Length: 86
Image (tube, rainbow, N blue to C red; front, side, top):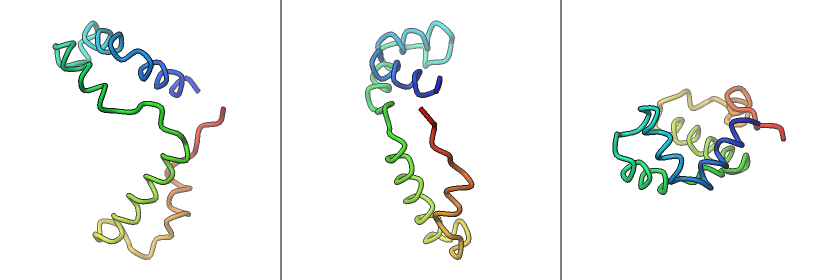
C-alpha cells in the first residue's frame, strides 16, 4: 500500500519529487531534467494495466524465444506478479 501511495504522490507532485530526488543524490543532478523525465511517466498505473502489460511481455518473450513457448502465460503471471490489495 505504501508503494501505491508513494506512486500517487509522485504523479501529483512531480516538480517536488524531482527536487527530492536531487536533494538525495538520486537524480541526474539537474532538477529540470529530472522533472521532464518524471513527466514522461504515469505513476498511477492500475493493477489491470499492469497485468495486461505483463501478459503482453510474457507472450512477446515466448514469441521471441526468450522464454519457453510452452509456458502457460496466466500461470506464469500468477507466479511472478500479485496485485496489491487496497
